[in-house]
Amino acid sequence: MQSTDFGNPIHVESLVRQIHAKSTRPLTLMEVCGGQTHAILRYGIDQLLPPHLRIVHGPGCPVCVTPAETIDRAIEIASVPGVIFCTFGDMLRVPGSQSHSNANDLMHAKSQGADVRVIQSPLEALRIARAESQNAAPGSMKRQVVLFAIGFETTAPATAMAIRQAKELQLDSFSALVCHVLVPPALDAIFADVDHGIDGLLAAGHVCTIAGDHPYHRLADQFNLPIAITGFEPVDLLRGILNLVEQLEAKPTSHRVDNLYEHIASAEGNLQAQRTVETVFAICDQHWRGMGSIPQSGLKLQPQFASFDASSRFPQGKLPGEQPSCCRAADVLRGKIRPIECPAFGTLCNPNHPLGAPMVSAEGACAAYFLYQALAPLNISERTPSKRTPSKRTPSELTQSESLNPKDDLAP
Amino acid sequence: MCLAIPGQILSIDSTGTLRMGRVDFGGVIQEVCLEYTPEIAVGDYAIVHVGFAIARLDVIRAKEILETIAQIPTE
Ligand code: SF4
Image (tube, rainbow over all chains, first blue to last red; front, side, top):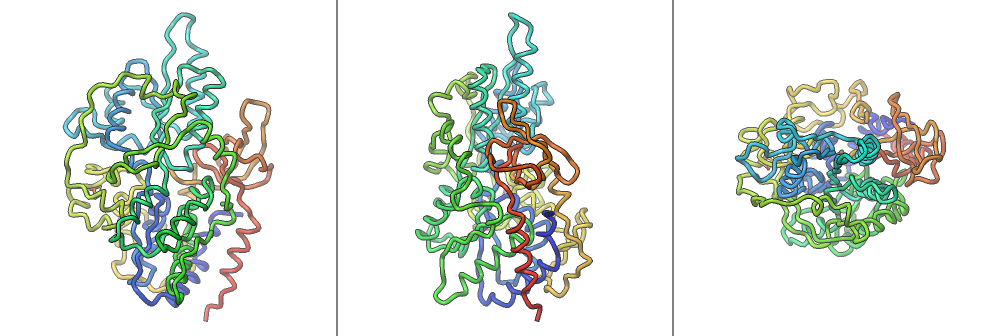
């Protein structure tokens, strides 16, 4: 079983043809997963659709919604002498709020001497903490290891396991700066706006793999919203889009939650992971960058794990508030505009000089548009920006020779 | 950081504090925590995210999905 089967051009062509046959009217569909954003742009899936089908991108990138104040705090803690600050690589260049200061992202802090290390898993941070405490000379100070714990429902179980282990091992040199966020409350905030303009939702399969599909049933009922749970390969995405078109073209329209990720995600989700998350974390209100405070949308440590909270372990100085900027990330994250409709896109704001977080992370919508705008759809061999066909392509323009090989993107 | 990717379980080690496995991602072998997938066995495909297997990929179901698509007439 190769993941690449889900990128097979013959299947892609078949699904695209069905979407064209069934879609008769303008629809706006939202996805909320950075991996899906990236895949849609990379494979030019948006360009294979009928012109009246519009895909917008919700707050699907946890890197992009991490508040500037939390980045400031991360920089502050990373800069404490002796601290080893462990983070996913995507966070290194996300700007904090001090737009004119000399260390406004973790990369900069690192260049000024902070020991910032890129990790692939929270367990790596735990491993570093164990090694440091074993290697510390008797009587000498152990180095503090801090995990920058960000991510959606999918990532929280990994953080929870690392913290639970740290407690079992009594690793007092380990702590976490926690900024986990939950997707359904953010969707509530988007759909509570009567002018949201979204007809159907592609729900992120891996979030449901952990959390199950029940939060989506409530959303579908409350907002009359058809929802397709799906993955992030071309066949996954097109099956999701076809499902939403079918639900919305039916008379009367339906608003079911259909799980098209059923080979991976079960209805109840991953119960072991849910249990560990509930043991370690409690739900709290959370600030989202570009979206403001959203009730019950974040995670904080339970009282019995509070000693592993880096934000109380390290003293906090005065942090500046977020500076006003022309960045329209708030509108991008709510699906009101697509990144190319932001006046700063590609001019004032680009990956070398990002004005907002969605231009930084590879999974941010603005960065994905910038990177793949110039690519022809499905022409995966051509990675360097060149001539992405401006007009929509018909399925017959797809040939089998156009290889779809998402595998290289999947290397860990 | 959001991707969850499939890999095949090569071996499982339950002797440490955490159940770990060696997983093959198309030739790249990595150590992965299997605590959240107690049902997973050697030879299975796991969906892996930030060093943790979060689900077992049902290969038969995945093949069925692709076969259903392949059977759609291409008029
Ligand atoms: S293009 Fe840049 S300035 Fe515009 S919304 Fe995206 S990140 Fe903000």
